[in-house]
Image 1 (cartoon, rainbow, N blue to C red):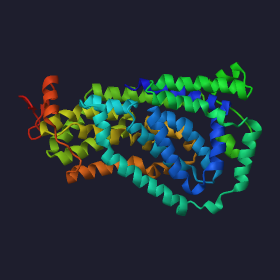
Image 2 (image 1 turned 180 degrees about the horizontal axis):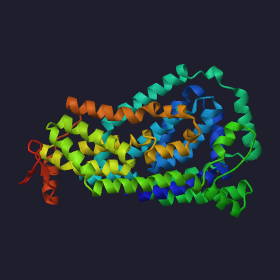
Image 3 (image 1 turned 60 degrees about the horizontal axis):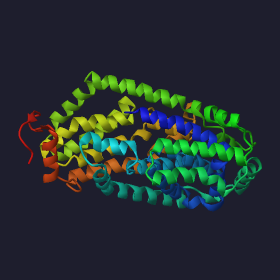
Image 4 (image 1 turned 135 degrees about the vertical axis):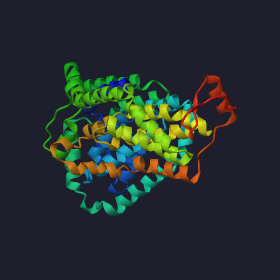
Amino acid sequence: MSLPSVSVLIIVGIIVGVWIASGTVPTLIYYGLIILSPEIFLAAAMILCSVVSVSLGTSWGTVGTIGLALMGIGAGFGIPPYWTAGAVVSGAFFGDKISPLSDTTNLAPAVTGTNVFDHIKNMMPTTIPAMLIALVIYLVAGFTVIDSTQTSFESINAITTALNEVFWISPWLLLPAVLVIGLAVTKQPPIPSLFAGAVAGGVMAMLFQGVGLHDIFTYGNSGYSIDTGVSEIDSLLNSGGIQSMMWTISLVLLALGFGGALERTGCLEAVISKIISRFKKFASIQTSAVLTSVATNTVAGDPYLSVALPGRMYAPVYRGLGYSTLNLSRGIEEGGTLVSPLVPWNAGGAFVITALSLNIGDGNFENLLYIPLAFACWTAPFIGIFYANMGWFSPKATDAEKAKWDADGEHRIDPESGSPTEGSYA
């Protein structure tokens, strides 16, 4: 289930290195520093990442490309990196959560037996409030918490001057990003779309930056390297390449092996079965489903397992209760997809830390503050749990859904006895 994410990681590593060499990322940083203001930057960053992530269908691709450029803009404004990272993560992972191109958005309804578009529609009651809450907080922070008077215009001028001296800056260099988004909007598969963006970036690097073909392959594998004399630029642009992703890739593979062992030996199933036996009502079942996804994210370190395993385990209980499994698909998406970047040792969290150059391994532990500052990611699960306890936006199974369960031979579990129930649903 997780191997497609390894492919995305490899391609994102290539894209970051090549897009820096082509001038695409430097151009985004350059124009961002000129157009945006410190007051609205965090809110704009969240919105931009949301739009791009919905289009691409990959939060990781968004974080590794647009997110990296936004980190450079934030550094130019003197905004702490953990604030910028929090806004990037909020937008990127929320866009991923509601994109029909996203792997986890398709995985959640697949393991619960629901339709992907019904699944997306059912997430809106939690998605919209969480995004609005985050947007308001980022706007307030921009005007109050972050002191725009401390923004060093000398630093901004130094960054833009250095970028102009090293790269040829032009709106034409944004074409690789436009190509990727255009392919995504036309519903092309995300992995070929991202690869097309990498190829386009290589072409732009050769045409406009005078980079040789051999250097393109070097940047794609080992990352870009430069010394501009401006530390903010060097720390961001000396990155990318497949090799920069190998630590995260190895973590994903280890998480796969560990999670697979936990599932095959029945360890997680035993824990979940014990949880299910203690709760009989819909509100408590919904709460435990969300928290089980969070716990699986924390223990197994793999976002895909945190969606797939609780989805398979809890679905029969929802059918036994007579509630739509759309409730379950929403719960595991929020406890799985949205929480994964908030766990530093999870594949999602490790990728965010690596791609955004937060340098936690170098002792910059204050950058872990991006976790509580990714407001949209952790407020949505709480909103969903609140709805379940209030009985709001918690649909019961329709006759059509019950008929589909019968036709598909889906089994159900009586929450009172914990035993399989015979007979038809209709």
